[in-house]
Image 1: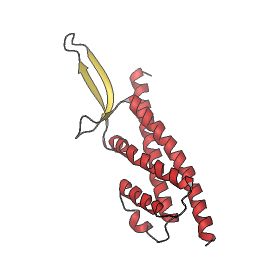
Image 2: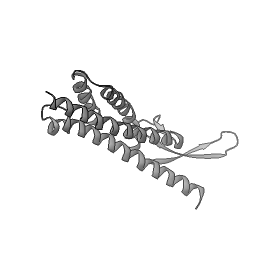
Image 3: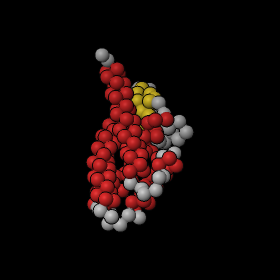
Image 4: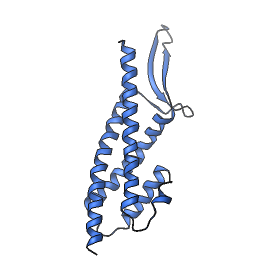
Length: 162
C-alpha cells in the first residue's frame, strides 16, 4: 500500500469516527428531550436544528431547581458540542481536497490534503486538526452519555419523591 493510500484511509476513518460520534451527541439531545421535560415537547423540539435544540435544553436545565453537578457538567459539555458542531459541519458538507503549493523560486510542488469550505476558503481542516477534532468528539460523546444517564436517574428519583 502506498503512503498516499494509507493517508487517504486515515482521512476516511477519522471522518467516519467524527461524524458517527457527533451523531451520538445529537442522539443524546433527543434522549434528554424525551425524558426530562415535564411537558411533551419531544415532537416539536426534535425538529429543531442542533444549536437551537441545545439552547432549549440549556434553558430547561437553567429552570430546574437544585440541579446537581452532573446537570452542570451536561450543560458545559453541550456548550462544547455546539462549538464542535462548526467543524462537524465543515467535515459533513465539504470533500477532502488536494491543495497544491508551488515554491515561487524553485518551482517545487508541495501537496497537502485538507477539508476546505467551498464558500469560505479560509476555513479548512488538515490531518492533524482532524485527528484532534475526532478525539475531542469521541471523548465528548462518551462524557455526555455518562452525564445523560445520571441526569435521567436524578430526574426520575426527584419525580418519584414528589
